[in-house]
Image (tube, rainbow, N blue to C red; front, side, top):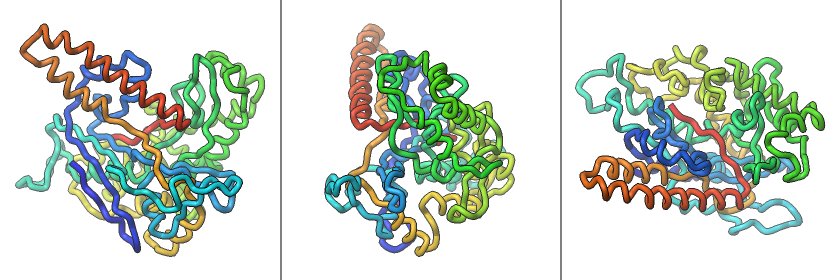
Length: 409
């Protein structure tokens, strides 16, 4: 299913959404997760037994801050489309007067900005066409879709990795090559630009840059030696990585600064039980779970089970979205658009759904009636999928961009 939304505001560009209702298929995930490359690709609702839905922006632009040309950000296409309607320009990399790649006009001719996947095999969905109100054991599908759309609009993509090095959280990095560390990317995720240490109000980007100050020569440090190398050569960077880990495992330790950088702070739902970073793209359940219009973006789905859907965002959510590139005031939007420029006319595509296509094939193979034919089909289908996944992985390495965590319910 594909739909388009029109953002409110002058010259706003339509947002394209691709949505799929598909069942969970644990067998397909297990069959294909043996290859490392396949495992990195398996980021969908279908790969998490407890996930009811999943969403992500699948296209991003690299933006340069006008007032600080050395600062780069990786922004989701929904943000760029909104700001393009307010005057965001394509000016190239800003290095040596280089012309913008692809021209000076944004190319929005692609199929989707947001991809949403919703489990079709859960019997708790409540639909508007039902004769009665939702029960305590039902969830209004519109609440889930709103939640996922907010992830697609930009409440996602944390850019922090807590799984690669035990005990440390590190920022975006290039994929390890041949067992060696290969260093950092040069962009800051858009969402991360607005996050602070809730206690000290220090921008998280300060910690990220402190970690990135450790710059070993490429392919000189083996992955197993990263921790002792940081402790020996860059103790400040090591301490910053430890601090990031602490923030991501302490409830209410991180917040989003709203009000144009000088207003209130919206707490995110960090917790030791969800150290991957996924909790950092949800509002704090204990703080906002009782507020119906803000509870839409908490991680505890029980907070909105049985609740009716409301099309109006709560004040906390509205302030958060305004900070992330969707201010209601046209003057604020124009000011934000003037503060950044894009380096290219074309978006970077990050995402894939071959795992979902393969799941359908695996279900057919597993349940088919010709046992021998089914067995013979498994190997070539698996080999074909892994080959395609490896091809996409190489393309992403060439682009030298790294993506990490997306939002899910």
